[in-house]
Image (cartoon, rainbow, N blue to C red; front, side):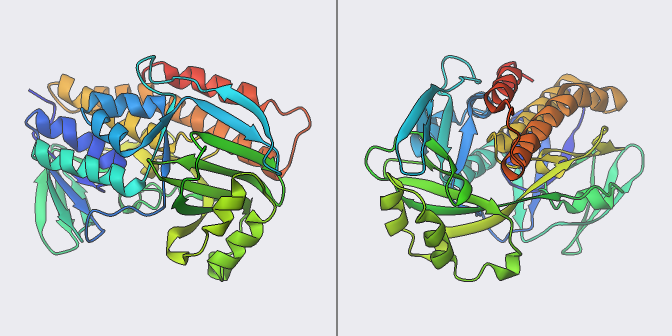
Length: 373
């Protein structure tokens, strides 16, 4: 018997869905509450490293995600004028049978996971979130924002970097801005772009792009963070920044025309110290740890949280401190290393260090996440 008979997951994003699928398949009654009104995803695209793909394969959704996205096995470095400087083989952190990375449009990834959640038998309620949590020792009594109530063996806060659950259980950690902001645009994929290429220098700290399908990709520009309310004309600003780049950016720039396809966010970070639970309520994913996308490990770490917690819950015969301790032993230091490395790379962009070993730092994280969590 699993350690839990019923579970409430707050948040139906990547982490929440990846936890719900194996639990529901094993016969656990899983309810998901999602504050959004429907299955949607903000942003333009996402890069999934091999260790993220490993979890998707184990969930049985890899074939569908692969068909929706664009796999690649190398990274290009270019000068601001578009000249190719180097082509670096990607680390296959998910194993030799998976690509080094995959770009995919966020709504497509969300749809694949939502289909798997429904097929597994988990129930999702949209436009609802948690309002109060009362841990009685052997259960958690829950009141939802629509006035309904329920009782669960476990509540999981998978509700993102601004988690409501985190505050409800008395954890006051909050995301911190890094000083960088990123412009992303969902656009056509010019012929010849078949991997991520990065540019360091020019008018931005970083310029890059990632293919997400047969004819789509997202491109991004990283600059000093500006007040969100002062973003102004998104098209004009992003096109002006892109003027400093040549090569493939000549085509990308011409396609920056629709403000609805442009997304601007700050780089933020969060790391909750262990333990991530208070009694029978536990945080996973961005609710517990979040990092700037400098190593593209954010989604991978969320997926790993879900995989490890599901494995432990299904292997134990009761829920207690040994389960939560084992979860922390396998997740806290690994997530901490990723967050700290991602922050270090962001700091080196803002305040360059002449002898900064960026390749060495990335290689160390690649070696870490190649090992299963």
